[in-house]
Amino acid sequence: MVAVGTTVSTGGPGGGSVTATVGTGGVSVGTSVTVGTGGVSVTSATSTGTGVMGACGDGPDAMILEENGQYTIVMHCTMDTVGNTGNLPKCLHSKWPLSHACIGCFADYGECSLEACGSVCEPDLTTASCEACRNQNCGAAFAGCSGFPALGSVTCDQILTDGGAQQTVNGQVPAEAFVTGYANSNYFELKNCGCSTKAPGHCRNVCDDALSNGPPDFCNGAPASADCLSCLENHCSTELMSCQGT
Image (cartoon, rainbow, N blue to C red; front, side, top):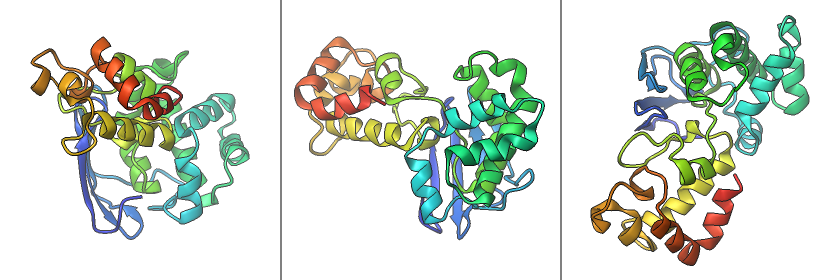
């Protein structure tokens, strides 16, 4: 979780941005969010129902959420309880020992996603169009309720091999784009090893087009080229293997 009083601004999964000032309960009401492949702009963040603002920011909830595939669990429970959404919180709680208030935020998000995006997200829950629809219709309310950014569906390996959610030339993928906290941390560890402007930054000469004079590469938000991958294998093998597994 981001510290209280911090203002966060990052590139969004679809080339937009996420800007939020974090209060004592998480992301503040009035959060300005531009997310999704459609560059949707949302100017307020409020809970849609059972959750309360910043309900997932307590230590135990935050630790559980950092280590689990949030998007996958929520959407599977949502689809499994179609026609009986009253069982959605129960399904979610069977997967996560979260507080009831935090579960309420995810249940709200699942119900919203189903109502707004059911036709877009079936049968593949991981498409860019599904993510854009969810972010447009449900992302801001979830962020305001839980204190966490809107959920994503991207893995570190997808970003490495096909660009994944990287839509901007600087290659900075926000945490909310990832399925799990592990994928997020593994991505940034690999980027640091290969692309940092300070040590170690082992592979900038072949992975950063500012130095290689080639087309955009891994350090610039594109799929890793053969030369870049070779360098990462030689100098960042541990980080690369972790990324490929998440």
